[in-house]
Length: 209
Image 1 (cartoon, rainbow, N blue to C red):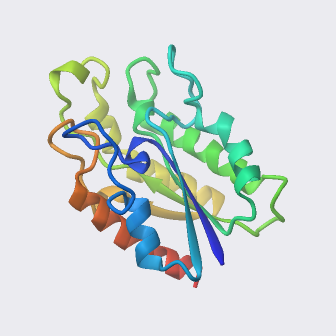
Image 2 (tube, rainbow, N blue to C red):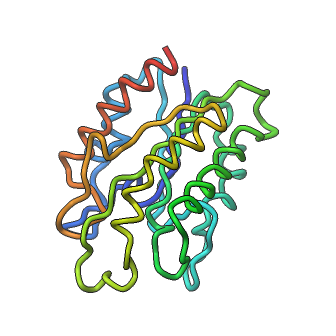
């Protein structure tokens, strides 16, 4: 059995842009991934949280820094064969005032935490860093919070690929397959979850044959 930890934010949690509720397990990309991989040889562990960042804590929202909670999750879910990391969209918020490169370096620190984890022998865990989808024009209520986010997120792929090369880990650009919903400019529709889960299945089978 090969164990895969999917570590992300609201798109991993399954936030539905039309309702604000959570998609059913079989709709979320993690559920689609599990179904596509099959349950006999692979186990998909879903670890998504709304508002999760790479390394930043947001005022008034506790436990949102991914790097702070990650070591406990790695210990809790060991042994692991692969960790899929898809974070960075929430780092675009105006309150953090981060450049795309700085956000990519936050993602790099998350990946380094996995690679250097004391619970895994060196080289025993594969890491797949996924650059998030490009943010579209947000609705008016999020306009100030996500000011400039679209232009910054367009550079995610370039910098995430760069840090993946520096760490010698796997890379995938989510925006090459799926797009954010027009409803809120951030979250994915049902079809996008399906597309992403099925695409990731093929990538993972290459990483963990």
